[in-house]
Image (cartoon, rainbow, N blue to C red; front, side, top):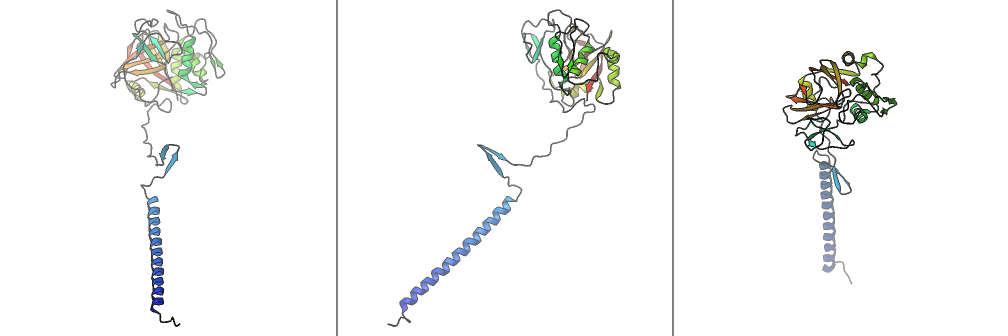
Length: 312
């Protein structure tokens, strides 16, 4: 039978041809669309807004380039670095007796050795400040305070037990533990060995002041001014652990700066020092408008403040 001119076979072949054409067209269109989408995603991944994210557990951390840290103004007399946080003003905390391990000292303005009711002040134990190879100066000062006489009405001019750190030992004192010894021991216990109780230039307050004023490196003397206290209160420089030189009618007395407590943003508050050779190991001085007043809240009657001796 002759099938060459059979119309039925011709229709079947034409249908197969159309199906093949449609299949080829669909495949080509799909490839073009996929290529366009991939290119678009690639461009998007390279744009500025794209921030790749990395998952860690249930937390999503986005990788963002940090903004440059703004430069802080440099204090003209920075005794140490980094700078302390600004002092947050607020009411002076009060309370009753505390244990020796408490982070505060308890003191009563009317009777520094009383502290027998909740009207007494809780003075924070200073932290931070200048440091040597074996800790901060103020940390060592707190250790020395714990070895001063603790009884009521005792004069704080003895030291027992002795304090040791960093290969240095203070030795015990039954008397004669003067204010400069307290400073020299605190610095040596921190690993700063330039000061010595065997050096006449360091033992008297007047000579120690002259020594600090003459130093050109390692140590810096900062003459007193209200601007210095303002820098301390606003965190531009840290006086914690520095030596405070007090001019008295009898000569120069020294103590180690403990903390500045501000009650408002106008520079009003109280600055405290730690000391020996006095009736009490802690003394506080009123600050008004960033200016330390000559009348103490406790016992050290001063005529003026010479300045601060700091470790750079």
